[in-house]
Each structure stands twice: as C-alpha cells, then as structure tokens.
Image (cartoon, rainbow, N blue to C red; front, top):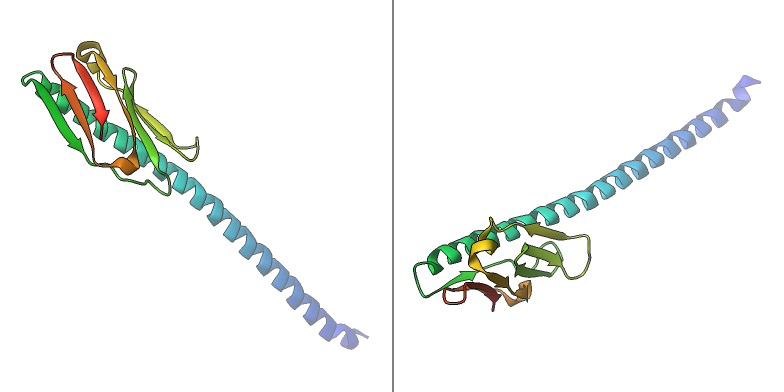
Length: 148
C-alpha cells in the first residue's frame, strides 16, 4: 500500500517546498523594500542638515565680511532637488530652516552661533529651484537677508 502513495508524497513535498520558497522570497522583498524607504528618509534628512550647515557657514562668512565692509554679499549654490523633493530654505533669528515643500517628513534646522544677538535681524525665504541664492549682510542696518 505504501507504493501507491509514494508519487503523491513526492508531489506534495515539492508543492510545500515551492510554497516555503515563495514565503521566503516575499519576506526578503518586503524587508528590503522597507529598508530602502528608511534609508531614503535618513539620507534626505542628512542632506537637508548639510544644506542648513552650508547656509550657516555662508551666513557666518557674510557677517564676518560685513563687519569690515559696507555690505557683504555671498553667492550660495544649493541643489535644486534633494531626493525627489523641492525644498524651501529660510533664515530668521531662530536659525536656518530647510523644509521640503511636498511633505512634512523632511525638515531640518540649524543654529546660527549667536550671530542673531549681534547681527540684528536675519530674514528671507526662497525655494531651492531659485538657485543660485545669495546672502547679503547690510552693515548699516545689521541685517542679513537671504534672496535671489
């Protein structure tokens, strides 16, 4: 009697192995898909942080030059798109802010090393698609402005 079921067991074994293979394939695909989304989120946030720090560096430079000259103007070249997001770059007395225009998931802020206490007013907001931007420091009014 065992000889009659022998072929059926082999077919059932192959079907079970195929099912296990499909489960493994689906789980690996799902894990790497979720991991790719997380890596994209982290790398975009890091890029926004780097852009903010670059703007702070140029702001410090403009402030330093503006103390000795009447006005100081620095051209700031920023990427037009990070990942797939266009972003808004803004400065105010609280710091430099980089925010994605299409989602709230991407945003970063950087301090300005207490320049806001001595420089006076800092203002301006521009989209990244308007690159190149410039930072102008007016010595007479002690004002730093981000503009096109």
